[in-house]
Length: 541
Ligand SMILES: C[S@@+](CC[C@H](N)C(=O)[O-])C[C@H]1O[C@@H](n2cnc3c(N)ncnc32)[C@H](O)[C@@H]1O
Image 1 (tube, protein in one colour):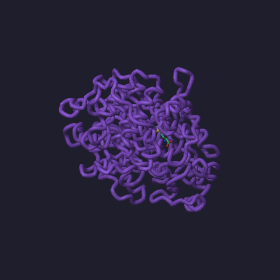
Image 2 (tube, protein in one colour; image 1 turned 135 degrees about the vertical axis):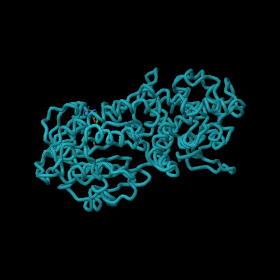
Image 3 (cartoon, rainbow, N blue to C red; image 1 turned 135 degrees about the horizontal axis):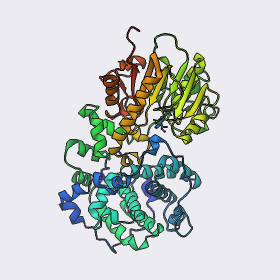
Image 4 (cartoon, rainbow, N blue to C red; image 1 turned 90 degrees about the vertical axis):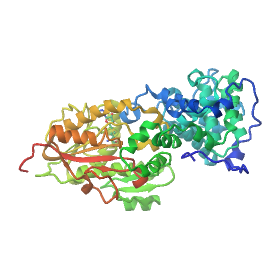
């Protein structure tokens, strides 16, 4: 449960987790509690100052780049964090009497804060290493992802109860406080268990002297009902308040609010905290979606002819995936790759297709599978050598040539029939896939990205032949990365925009423009954007 604060029932009914994970003794008392409830309760001005937008989580993220979208990093965080004493943090926590689920959650949260790790990569490995399955694994996942998703809210609450600025608190202590505060505010774990285990985590992290301080803050937090915290700390203003309640930075909610109707905004924000179902792509020419659904016991997708929805299980264990006949790919991405290959071109399609920003190769692989059927060929350009290697792996056996080059001057010739520009973007349309992502992103990056996006689209419009087609897409719905880029291409470069809605199946509401804007809450896809363009000098064709 991460969409809103829980309301704790008066009877205090226990969730199963509360009994299973709440058995670590009585809370530690007193000793250094300098945050005070009065301060938290009475001063609304202070409450707003401590809001998510000013929380440490946000500040921590300011200088971080968006490697998840630009993709320049692999998973270097698979191990377990070591304490100074040569013991792993997980072991130190277990030695302090913390259950393995919380120990793993703490370790992963620490890695995300300290090393910019991605929780969705680190957590599964940590669970396997500790042999956590079933309810324990589910509990560890819930509190890890929940803590990371709601970070700004947690920090605002902690700030209200702390005598020290968050920046002055040791990172180990702040992460333990976050994990504890999440359990208190958003789960049915008994408060005393949340407090006690978090204090033990502080000790496990080598900050024994801060255990009274942490205990004091957490106990203060438990004295106010979760909904009351929310009311007290929500900033003024409709969108800012809504953003806070749904644990989003205000600027992201404002970005979404520029695209959807106001009454839809709560659903947009709520969808970012829901677990997405896994979408598989059945590679054309290898296996049909019907066969894949039958073999794997899953449902065929609603929109893409290649999609299969997988509600549970590990896709990596499926035979068709292991054999390269199928892969994991969001259904929206499938529709975009398919559109690139199917939008009519004027004149004969010579089979020269280009993917200008191809890493890690999901769309290039689908384009490659369709190219094989059409006897076409795909050139896949990627600026990052590491990402280019990932494409090589993904497109094995397909008519795809990978080039490490800058898409603004890729040196791959020109005269292409079909080009995809799946531009590097803020990734605001895929927040549900990365719990920590919303607090890592910064609005300041959008200006830089949109310059690059326009340059890449301009490059594509030069590389496409007259009569050919350029598809521009992003996994962001932010207008500065979507419509503004397309409008500029039309105004400054004379590009012609086609009605992209004609090149996807009927998906209901995809926006009022010629472009397509998909949404998780409407379509179950990431918030993918797609526009279809031709170059400007096509009179008489
Ligand atoms: C949104 S991702 C593309 C996802 C890919 N189409 C897929 O479906 O797997 C954008 C990619 O563009 C790459 N990129 C960033 N700047 C680039 C540039 N100047 N030229 C080419 N590629 C670039 C990034 O490294 C990243 O791999």
